[in-house]
Image (cartoon, rainbow, N blue to C red; front, side, top):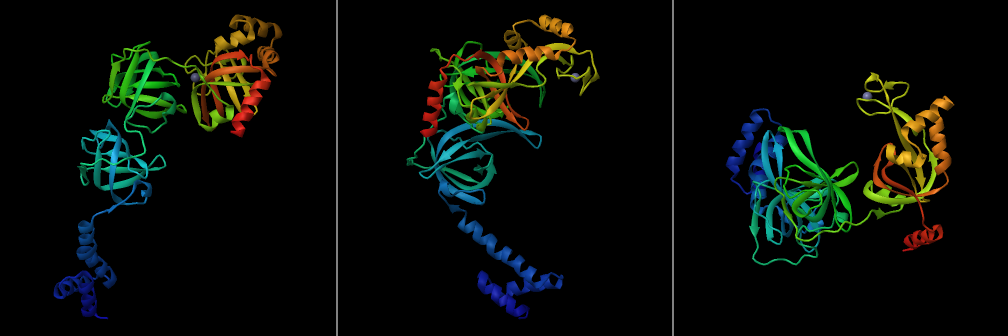
Length: 423
Ligand SMILES: [Zn+2]
């Protein structure tokens, strides 16, 4: 085939004038563009560009949207609509985010422009792109997308609106509303993106769970003991547990009822570890070992790290300070965790103060006697342990807040576990 034949073939494929195609093709070939590349370039110029803008992206069901879907058009109901400020290329930008659904499924979204979406709206979103976010497909739409409100709503098998109990929140959730009591709160100064910033951090509780929270734009209604409704919060992972984030876009109001705060969640150790962490859980198991680094220990006065022979990993030779700690391995038959007890809890278990421990170590001329005394007392016995579980590459650690000998009937508990396994 010569250039003339190729031009004729292309012209008929693309439905454009042969003389024009031939001239373009000849020009490109004269500029040493390989013929095949020249043809591809003309196909792009006349063909694919034209066809993509005339046909537009395909309309799809949410259930069929995957990370490789390219650009899509969907008709959906807005389940939740949150706002967040992000810094993008040096500028603050308000983005919308939440969840959308149709009859077939639901999906998270980020809206890079303000389309005024409200929960319950049914909209057709044209030319949205799909990216993967936290392992799931997520719809993104902005300047190059169209959002049109539909007159008729569609029925979706999901709850519209962001109201949720604390127990069901998980990292990645956005546009959520919670009603909770502020059980702890403190003001903190952090070095934020705009220099020193005051924030609030603490703990929220409802009937179902307690979770840590951060308020990045302190709201006056958030006071210790207050019951509040916070709308448009998002959830991130903090030390292995979901953490509620209140932002400048959240609204917080005091409730005229008191939200009761439930107790810790009782879990099997395996279940808590499989979750990757858990805030305020209660585990019951046998202490099978008191680990090295328990009893009378020494800490760096600057960073609090445990030091060996007066040497801090970070600060070198330091004037170390005595402390008490227990690292107890707890086993409930499903898995094990290391329960870490602070000085107060360790003093209870040891039955003496830090000064008593020093005295015992001096007399024995060996500080390991303190850990041995504790081990004699706890190893082989069953305890009910309450605390916050984090799981990382070093294992599962429980920051312990209560440590008490179990008054459970072991037979009854074995039965309960069996029921759970059989269910
Ligand atoms: Zn140090």
